[in-house]
Length: 513
Image (cartoon, rainbow, N blue to C red; front, side, top):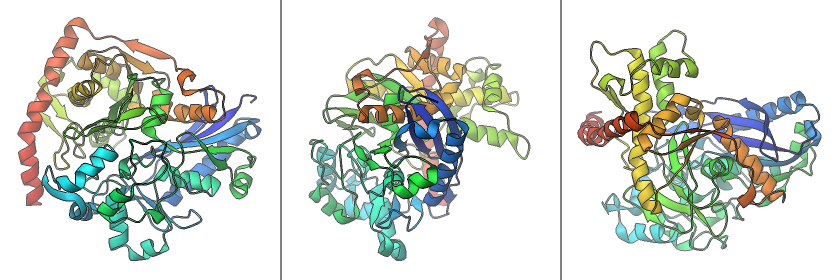
């Protein structure tokens, strides 16, 4: 191995991906691992941050041993992955309690005490400063760092007493590599505690902190996006068999890594992630918020740019859920077998519809209570139709959001770069092209796009590229089918009326339980 390498870490909701990637963006070797999310009946959803770190260390050692000569060619380490989660750590970066993930809603009562009210669940006087300055607002469901930190401080006194820093998972991993506690405007974006009108001001906003009763001393210092935090600590370098001269780059959310990995770094170049969750994003030149549909422009890839943020709570996870249900206690079909089965069903799934709100929804409507379902099943419905209806339903949900994204951007967005595990299916890519009525580009190795993006940011930090000229991945292009595309778009419109039909039932069901 003679190429310069980046050790890339992508910590997803389901577990970490670890990769050796060249500074040109070529993925050399990877490992993908799963971790357990621990759910509790009171709305808790936690993971073990020590489990992440143990997996990453052992996987890194195996990769370095497998790729001959790689240990001497690693130049940088960059971490990307999930956000809107909180790891409490001590002064040395060791977890003092579990990671409270973005699925955890136990802190909602404390966020509502701080900023709740009559206007869409908010007190206008308290929430408008957040929107004006940061571009967003605390989740009244508690599913972000504000609710999570308040939960720890109010209900976990032993954890709180031992905690020096409340960190995002990606910043926690960066600290484990370096021993340095840091964050950026981007990594802390859904904490909504920075004045994002001033991206070159590396400070938390004291007024916003006061509104929810948080103390800045527990938040890691801010530094620029894509900057070098430091070098690998001697202890970790020795354990991994790497040089202590390896630089560690400030961590970035998977949203930003996806944009870089998809080659969508210029204004309005659009990518769509079809992963566990799903989102549609592009860089934009100005800060802006659509509070009605949970869309915002947040700190982007530089100090003079923003990226669009939104989230649909269930993306390709819907297909994984169906695979497990269909398997019962038997063997599960592979992803390729599932999508091949879907290909045997006619487009439209013979009228079967699926709404993918398995975990509620966030964009374009914020409803934690709404639930998924099949509609128009009959005694003749086949498993192929069920699978295809899931794929079509996820795409229809994306199309619902996409209309608001184009209004937000103020222009037609095309082509759409598709990434994430779901984008490995050519059938799903064609369904998306037909449903969105846009050219879709299935980027090469879509499951690993964020690993690639993280490595390219490492190359930028080392001065090998600028964000404007990072190498673009190869891609396969899909175009809307003239006739089938029109039918797909007409069927996709059903999702709006299905939501209106189901939201009252979901609310009543929640109250009954």
